[in-house]
Image 1 (cartoon, rainbow, N blue to C red):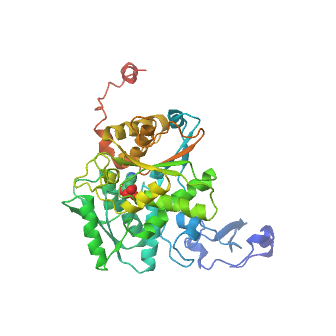
Image 2: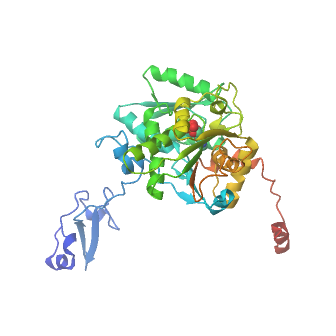
Image 3: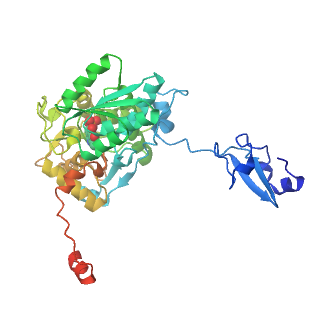
Length: 418
Ligand SMILES: Cc1ncc(COP(=O)(O)O)c(C=O)c1O
């Protein structure tokens, strides 16, 4: 197609160029567009349609995801493949109502990991673990899971175009998480066992070399999860004074502490936080310092009796002069509701263990670590690890049955009861 001098004169200089190599026959496309690369600019002059290549091809946003942001801190080379769903960069929400409960002019922030692509913090580690697996030409991922790891592994395997097998304790997975693994196309195997047995099986299968394990025993998972600590330090300008989080297999507390330490040693932050981990009372091996053979709690994500990163969690708590403590199921459920209704953040029960823990720290008589005498104006970050919609059954049980009312104003006003 020829561009007339008159038409060319109407175009800005930066737009002048050659025909797009992707489109050979302009008559076949109307309205005009380049379906392959979206790199065309269209303009019209009289009856003449002009297809011009932009001097700069249209750029797609490639910068999202924890690898894009923190590659220098991760075991990913410049040329390594990146499998990302845009994870990370989660909101650090200032919570006035929570801050009031603590008092002493403290500021409480919630790091809401439930807004990651599959609804939990696992995505931060999974993008790194799966990218590395692809670099090593892996074909099948495998993991044991209390639910969230399986959802995340399945999603990233789908994105990478490889298979994923998830080994789950039968009947012990929150329905939303199971649905996710199914929807993303994972091979789901339910075993008559708890999580700890499932992980033992996965370790043995991994040793045979047919599978890449993407549980947090894979160091790439921990490396990726460190990025949450980087984000917090970047956002508040330093590490917080206290970091509160739930503990199950103990990979996350290990990752946060490694992240804070890494940033500190590179001069990116001046301080280190006190790490406070909370386990469910019926599944608290680190707190009791013994394996729990039959762990039980409503918070299925942390129903773990023999954590893989036990030693590392102890080190994080010891080195940071922190503590591990327990919260009951009742305290967890109350905290879940409180957070939803006072701060508008709906989390799954395991995540609410962090909030229940925060409340416990306000009670001098009950807490292993009391907030009664912490420095005024302390900054406290609580990580909430997974979205509330993942475990709808827990809430459903507490919801009153909805009874329909007549479709008139009086009946509806009476039902509103305000
Ligand atoms: C929602 C949620 N919170 C907390 C945890 C505990 O994390 P970790 O096992 O790394 O201690 C998990 C682990 O599965 C989880 O899914």
